[in-house]
Length: 128
Image (cartoon, rainbow, N blue to C red):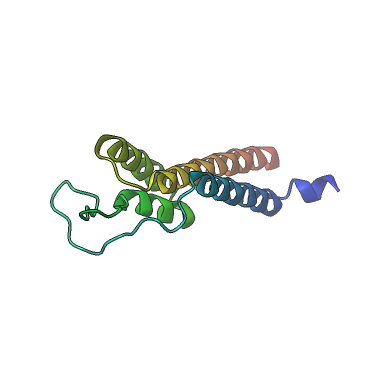
């Protein structure tokens, strides 16, 4: 029974389930369901939001951070998520919850990578 719980695949699946649960909780607590839009309009240099008069705008880096977090690009998700949250605080806009979800997923992926590397190193040392 102990070997089943220490299997790397089982541990990885457990971490993924916990990460998805955290992201869902963050998004539900944000209270924004379908209130923002993302535009495909070209952006001016240095402008990462699609400012629409009288409308909502979502920070593009927040969306990219969340996508990177979902496709296992942990470090990129963390960096872009922090940049997006900083821009949202300074300039306004929406997407803070998406950026936070990307940050959380990124840190979870980095943590899992470190654990896998340490376990692999320990097992290779023990086997030699």
